[in-house]
Image 1: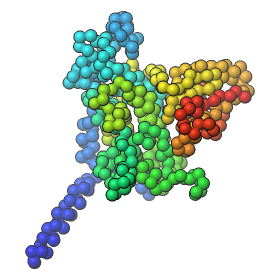
Image 2: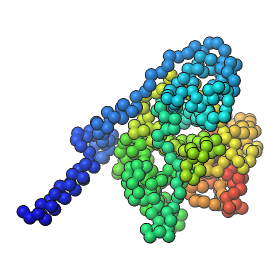
Image 3: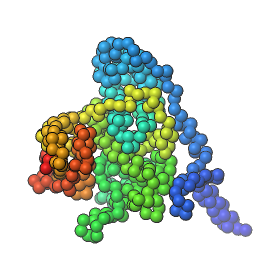
Length: 452
């Protein structure tokens, strides 16, 4: 055999070894997840599961403290949250949160050691907001977290900054370059599991309300803006979700028809709410801290760190594999969402609810808008409430309509919470405002309530 042939075989062997190195080494387990013959199976690598089990251990809870005695707000200075806990309960919570978030740094990670009442450290301000966010998740997003709930440990796992966060990117590539516009593709990144897909699915889908669905519901060309390019962004998000939860696509979808809700598993509904929850938290809680973080904690475009599916799940189909820490920390199980006053949002009026840009979160003065409406509906059992969601003429029409619909849903839920049967609430088709092509008029972002 000639030297050239031997050299060729050697290179083939090296190439084959490299290819095999990227494959799963047996044994690999499969678990049937749907009807036989439908391909609804989950594939698990037992070696990876062993590693994941170690990473998802729940820390031991501190023994409960007595609820007796003076309240924390009466003993400690500048207690703005959890002041209704006893001193013992409050101290237990502080020790727990320190072990979850800053076990090495201790209390001084958030507090001024010389004056615990001092608010000069940004970490203390952030910690307050994160406690509010945790309470909001557990009380208002049961559609995603159910009764298992979350605590600060769910995301932090002993790290001051959770490992899985994201910032906005610079956006489009420079189209004047030789390769033209790549849309962030063909750049190896774990955000999309190293796939040749757009590498930032978070900004449009978890930071904004861009429509995720890629199958058009109307004929071309009228009204159908779906395309292969848009589908690639959606697949990028799906790759992220699959990797974040350690599951296959069939965990939520049936490959017979990915778009069909009827053929999908219940987990798809849970994931749908999870996406909406991430948008809510990124805008109304993390986004509200834009003026709090120092420059070195901001992203390259000056935005704050935000969360995605991996922030909580960290490779497990349920965070901490479904183990609940909430039962040991009931102070995080409830709480009223604290609305952030967004610049340029008008005060609610009788029968009109205004919203912040890109948000469907109800404003703090919601009662002002629905108070008389609720009274009128209760006084006349035959009357119904009609909700009309408005949006601006600027931006993507489908995204605007979806956001207007979500805002109307939020108002409907507020009426339900006030004792109005949802059957008495009629939702009108989203309406585009005529005189707001610039999209700057905050009154375009509203829901009007009419009792008829």
